[in-house]
Length: 175
Image (cartoon, rainbow, N blue to C red; front, side, top):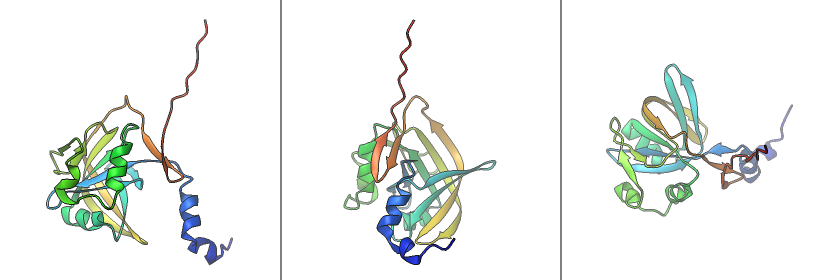
């Protein structure tokens, strides 16, 4: 099937179509030499053995340079109550460097130094193992060095460019 180039070149339509895929929200972080964070929904598990994940980062983003320099990174899978953190790290006008973490509860990862956000659904520390061309993005592949998770929490998701929360279905039990 041939798709007209005009359909694929309309970035607004393409973004809207991509936005119909509900996905989790993460904050990707780097520690030294330049602490930085970025809200991202382009995160995926790749392999269980070895444990690998990927994040896709726009080539023009500050995170692209930081991640390439640091060689290690953190991924914080946000819980439903962390929309403020998602918005903060997506705000391009926020302070950069260590200052962007001043009003966020976090601890440095023991293996990477990357900021790990308190209250996240899951947190990973990763070592960068490869970077692949992905058009206007780079696909960064990372080996998981450490993780922790909070299975008692619900995720923050993004759908059609808006944050959403999953509400567990309530079933009434009658006796």
